[in-house]
Image 1 (tube, helix red, strand yellow):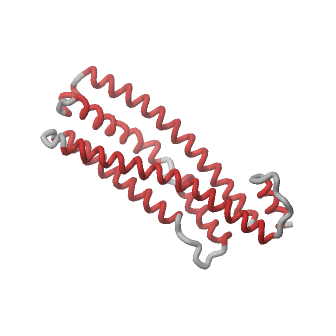
Image 2: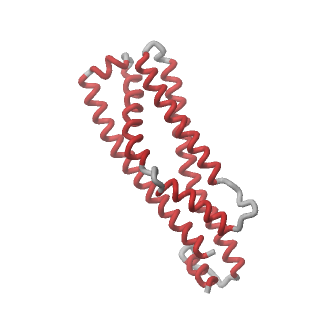
Length: 202
């Protein structure tokens, strides 16, 4: 009965499946499990690259605006938050990459599912989207806009035309960000559900 359950799960992945022993099916499930986990690594990798790119931009622009204290403060706050996000991504990568050691595939997968469930469905899983994202978007927009205006921070934010531009950029940026995050979250939840199915079949 259990072998049939595993076969049914695997048929969702490979419709051309041929009759296999329980051991062979478990090996195939182990491979598919690793491939599905790797999809989370890809997202963490993109997140890491974005954080590093933003940190480099903040450092370069700050050095070019050493005489603009408000701009320096804006970049410094944004730098600290981005650095924290980078460290969090790297720690998440390390946790997800932990080897199985003496654990069975089922026990190891159970730990990964708990970890991913906490990230995606935990108490603070929406904190970034609801609170931090709008705040960070305002600061990023200010950093980019003020830098390329070639004017002091205070002068730019007092300019009515600049304010309207900032508001428009914020609204568009927020809409694009929410859409992208929603798509990524659905993709992650789909993979998480598939991992749960694999775990149930082991």
